[in-house]
Length: 399
Image 1 (cartoon, rainbow, N blue to C red):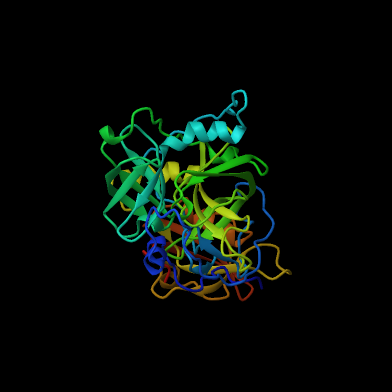
Image 2: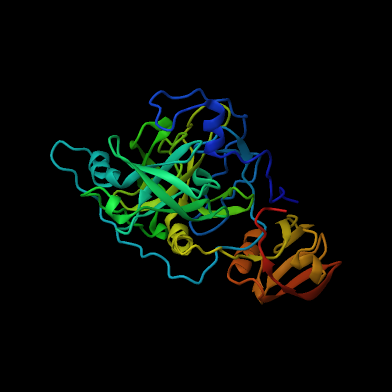
């Protein structure tokens, strides 16, 4: 039997917690001391894009890009992102051509950095970026935390601007902040999202953010992995995450990961520390742009995103079995438990679609809505049976 699909350990620790503990000013130019992180194993090799095969299922510790705490990346029980609002458009991206004497990274930085902001709460600060002329700013949920108001600042010499938090989503670690349009500095052009399905391993990547309060710092690298899965602040799973070796450090969270055309391919969220260093060791993770394109419009409308929930934990079947996902845990009171699924049932199909792996369970459920009924085919004691399950609404936090 494979590794358990949920490996959450420890407490989720937001940037605001670290800033409070260290007593660091939001715009302190002196890097504060960093507590050590636990040593853990590296993630598995990258799987092909659009699959969840590259899941981080060891005792990999992924640190928030602005947190000192650590947690193990695990797998979502089930369910994907909610719908109901048109996603933001994806803009085709052409490489920015540097002018004479300018590097590629320098050209991208010059074009994109004016739209990158610091986002400050009463106890800490992170990064965000402007996405339209209406004053909409994207950041991380763990940067904003429970704040309803934040302070936004454009550039090193920018003035402090009051921002309202329109919505946050722990399941994707995304947040939307709004400022008055007339407070946007003249000449600042919003960043546009690329289609993250077109991203490939080896593509150029540049991260812009505010590590340790050093505003609009640029770091350069490549896309080093695709199809990763990481734990969200509420313990569920964020899928199709982009891995990069562009150095990301405390304070970068919420900032953009950009392609060679200066388009946003991801929202920087977490790093691996591995216990070998107090900072970045070359493995960072960004929430993919297509997830942001879907979720941000809903958060901007103040919507609470409802996601389908089956209420099972699964693992791959034994090597002697060719297909299926074995139920290793049923969550008390969950839809699957109420419908009669049992531990050690092997899920072989959902709504007629064959289940070969635990990832197939996630994908099948994510296509549905809370309240939908699904036909779950299971193998139990050598016999096949079909169980009808009415999907619930995913709880706010992992049970």
